[in-house]
Amino acid sequence: MSRSPSFSAKAESNTYVDPDAIQKWIVAFCIIRFDLEQGQLIEECYPPGCLTPEEELDIAFSSFPDSVSQHHNRSSIHDSMFFFRTQRRGKSPSNEPKSKSKYLYGFVFNRQRHDERLKRGGEQKSVVILSPSPYSSLFKPLLQIMGPLYFDIGRKALDYVAGSMSTWSTPLPGQLMELPIGNATLKVNLPPVHSLSFDFDSEMLFEESASSMAPLLPTNQTIPHGLFHDSDVFGIFRGLLLQLWLLWELLLIGEPILIIAPTPPQCCEAVASLISLVAPLFISVDFRPYFTIHDPYFARLNSLQEGETFPPILLGVTNLFFLKSLRNVPHIVSVGNPAPNSTSGRVKVGFSSRASTGRLSGGISFPNLNKFSPSNLLSAVKLKREGPLCLMTEHKEAIWSSYMPITKPDTSILNRLVDAGLSPRVEESMSVVNNEILRRHFLELTTNFLAPFGPYFRVNTPSVGSSPFLDPPPLPAFDFDEFLGSLSTRGPGKFLSKRMRNNWLDLYRRFMKGHNFKPWFERKRCVAEQEQHRLWRQARLNADIQDFITKSSELEIVEKFNAIERHLHVEMQQSKKAVNNSEASWHKLKGDLKAVFNVLPKDMQHLLLMNPERANLLQ
Image (cartoon, rainbow, N blue to C red; front, side):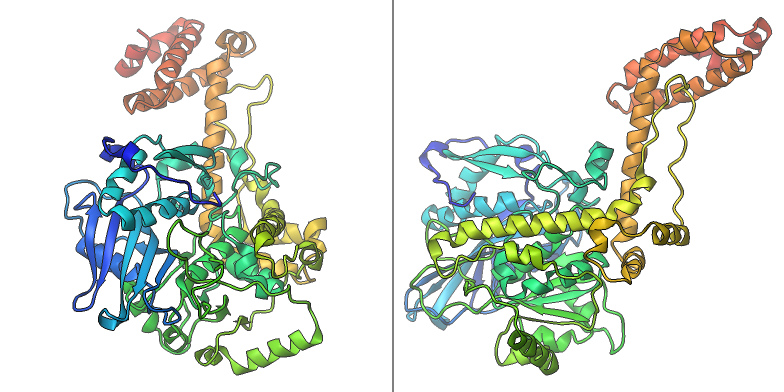
């Protein structure tokens, strides 16, 4: 949604709150205040008792900008929205089971009220939605309602939103959902199952189909194909568009990247945008859209000695201290522009659109689209020579990395981008168009890059006339050297050959040795195996056992008996777990087992019945 829908509090005043229903979407709502004497304090946590003391501390520190901006007039209100990702830790104080997720996502609406009459010239408070789900397309517009509403009516806002959320159905990843909120409806596309972490819900893995994971270019561009499909790639990387292919490669192979921006909304937008560029690849590297020195993981990163390998992670920061403390990080990206010095005028925010009250911080300016010229090249060389510490004196958009990219920038894509100039009226719509162009290109780039792995996920279906009662053949075994040798012979394909240099095979080597490959490959194999199992199981349910009996020899009939008996035991176990259709499959296989048994020779029947368990099955 590009605009904040209205919310009628009166209509929701008596709404019943269903804790089980809202826990399908969130862990908690938190209200956090910055106290001058005690620091960050959680005033409200709804429902209470769902966070450990360690988690409360982490969330409180992550819910405020590193410092209050001083570029505002007396008594002004300054709102911003951003999000963070923090690891769950500590022993839960409540008796309720902790979420399966290893991480919590915190979506923050922060309000800074500047008043010279108050201590330190102002006060801060944040409204936070905590969820195990990276559903930015939902929680961003929800915060645009909930944040201003809280500052209008206080604690009741949490009850009103929770009441509306109680009516929502179970999340359907990869689908468009219409979710009522007050007198409005949020229409959101949730990210697909294959982009969500195992830790989010391991059971979801088995709901994926082989088609949803197939390395083919999706034809339907209206649905998301990865995380953070709503991020503004063009807006946040407008000054570094020529470097997007470099950044795509770095994230693809799992290199550590430090993104520094003037404001939390900008660094969050940059991290989210980079992740969205590698869809439909499942990302395994750790990523922190907004990272502070108070995060427990910072101690480990800060303790790395000179020359030690930096762990694979994507960090978004605003504190310039990280430039000195994390000297081992090999790739540093500086994005965004400092906030304007005045409260007047329109402010563009990377993480969200304008809310109904206040003014969102973290604006980035939209100068004319930079033309590629020798002067720009000289400026880039100068920045590289100065190094990232030059940001200590003046913020500049730049990249510092010694990595030599294999993928060439596609200038034909850049030439298709629409420049809105300085017109704020068309700025937002032009960003939408440009984002679609960029995202479509990188989706095609990633899909073509992953395509050579497709045969290793190819599902075998029972051929016509063959027996579905036998075990399906295993998926092709993967060998690193064999794959590279075969790929070197075939070539990268027409799409990639135009966009990659002659050493394109090195990118596959780096990818397979990187942090993303193994979890992605194993997950794809697991999904393919589950799909193959489902297809063969369905074929057994549809098979007419009499047709196979009449066409089989005595030895083949014995083999079918043993195979059906083995499948029957599996279905009986599944039936105890209340797996869908397991009871129907069990009865079908039991009938098939009896039919095969009846055509066996009498002496063999007698021999088989000597097993009490088997005799019980044949009764």
